Image (cartoon, rainbow, N blue to C red; front, side, top):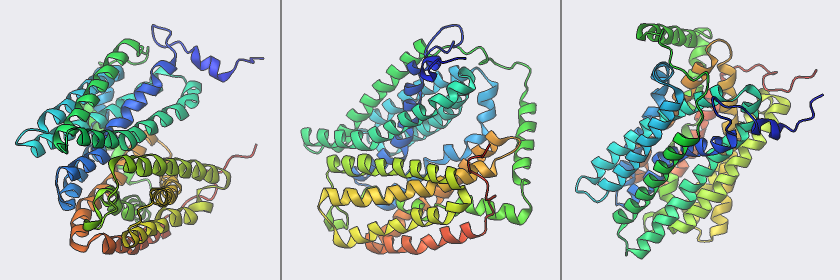
Length: 443
């Protein structure tokens, strides 16, 4: 009988030609995966707001930055075909460091907007490609036992990166703005130069420590035509999984389940930071980091954990409608705050905790439905397509959210979002889920 502790066995995983514990590279790999995402999707919003852009422009242009994550399934086969997963990981980390330096360099130029948007797009493309390669490397380098053991570790360090993005980078920029007397562009350039240095250090570290997996090899016998035919078969299989009516309902659900949240995502950050005279709460960067980047994210994590526990006990179908209520109804806190304009940081943090906890619960339903829908052959690729469709569902409404807010003001905009919650209820009504899906099997 083997009485070895699971943590001891994964610490002794033979990795490629070298014996390197996964603890040496799994945390840093997924930290490197999470940080660019939060920089592109959240930190860029705050930076552009502080540089004087309107909410209309911020929402429109930063929403476009999500496009690489929408279409990444289209080039994922090429990451499998050319070079190795390790090569792609290292190449993308070097490119991420370069793009961060590019943002820092162009912030003080006369073409600062065009320059920063170019490098943010480069960062988004590199990050989406890094996601593909990192997940592939993780599955090749670790056996199934080690993969299961480290799944919580990788998710934790991804979330730590998100906390640092919202809870540290924005406050640091605020401190620098005080030190340099509101030279916002210069302060942000210092932040991005620091991030570039961190990513170059991660690239150097991983180049030294990440082992070369025995199975991480180039396949010289696969041609581009074979990849194209494989993509064709995969997409045909995806869109013929269900009868056409059920398929249409499923695609609509994936697109519009988070429609209210898609409208809120960009505008909640500006609402928290803009002054009372513009209808916002006027939080200082340090307070924003605590309320939204720390307390709010803790609520999101707890909501996801609780949602997973409930669904695994009783099945997704049992908790579907409570999850729908959880992702929509707590949005009312923004309506209240837009009228009351509270200045108590702990009260604001509590409101954000409630809303983010509900979002964590509700997002569990979407994640599990994508897993349910993707069952069968090509399940990995089909799940990637599902995530691409959901990213598109966030990107398109996000583009017009700033224009609507600037036209209506925060108060009316948040009331409109509450009415739009009806869409989430309607699209959920038409989907079908096996009542047994998600339940723990009884032996």
